[in-house]
Length: 497
Length: 131
Image 1 (cartoon, rainbow over the protein chains, first blue to last red):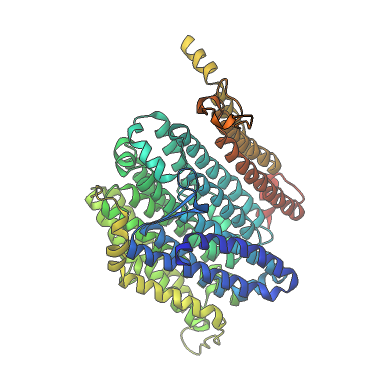
Image 2 (cartoon, rainbow over the protein chains, first blue to last red):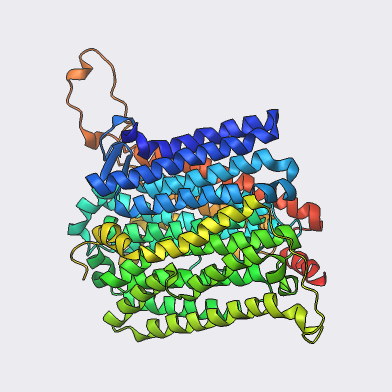
């Protein structure tokens, strides 16, 4: 059983999606337990796989017994073991947390929604586990197409257009990636990542290889919303239903950053990416612009959800910049930030989900008096906010620490300044919301005979998952040392100092 | 000039795919009508499919099927005689993906049309702004 974990975590959700779809025709209430069972199996396989990788080293899995480069091989090391666990666990937590809001937002579409949900998770897990460049494209499109549908189920006025714009950009991104893989195939005659990596070293001066690398990178940057290619993200994530945005926002961009790091570290070598091409400095400067612009756009927003989407744009800048600093600390920070940012974004969007469930809005006016109305939700929000700002002992601090020390080591002070600037802006952003939520209603009564709003907290099924995520933020922060020493340090090649 | 023409003629498949790709990209960026953008997107995807198909071609190559004649299994198989089928097979998958993308895009287009009764992007945006 355990030797089949790599394929179970893709095939079980894939097949279960069809069963859930059929179950939805019989009885809508069957869908949720099926989806939970499916994602539990996936999460169990992912975590089991991570532990197996930690004990036994890299796991190779040949689909259908075909040896690579002929067959598709799944290739799991510490890096994707970690990312797989984060994806599957956060998808499972979000599934449980969003049950009530799904039942209320689109009661007639429960079956299709859970089908798409599970297929989306299949796509994300598949992208992460696969060791085949073309297989990655197919799974990327599975994830993206279901993502477009999940987003389009939101706000009736705005969501379809936002989703269609995302579809245009997403298709361009995926096609660019496919084109880059085509160039790699012309040069190497192989699609298996490890096989390509073994053939490429003699060909690094070839213009076709450079073109392939740059085209693949541009495709991924579009998909991960790296400024200035971020245009699709804010509207798509804002107008999506809360269950979809808290699923897609933590996962999609982070998985694409994983793919970028995988291409830099495994398919190509860090030496090629950072030295031969000589573009890493410009990419870090682009990341600086991404962070600064993301922060400025976030300041201009007047509603919570859209503000969070621009914070994601800035966070993508953190990770791209960290990965392209070209040293060990920066890469560690980028990989650690994939985990942390997925959890932080999940926490923030679950809070938005709870607020929407109770208040039916997420503009700043709707947040007045929320601390007395929903103290537990807002308590979790404060933890998430502290983590995004980067206050110890929450996990956001530690990845930012690695990123900053990487930037100092590379003497790239522009990136240091951008990180500090963005942290300061985050302080302003989140304390503004905390101020609105805590003090606003009292202002009307001059501090005298105020009547705090009666408590109207979100249901327990939404609160408990939120608390688990909020506790996870602190726990991951406390165990950062273990994550870095036992997982991340094995991922980064020895040559990268 | 002679070199340029030679590069143009010798690698005409690349020029065709790049031209098609740019036509598609232009339509997606410059057109105002959502359906025209979808058409542009499809041209863009088709360009890449053509690119893949063209790289599998080999001069004088034949179908990659080993004939089952008398004693055929004892013949030596020369890989050079056969065209590479893998890019074509990959493109079967890519065609399926592009059809699915087209389907989702058109479905979204229907949703937008039912809500705004137009497919011109500027008219939709002005309707959104009015509210």
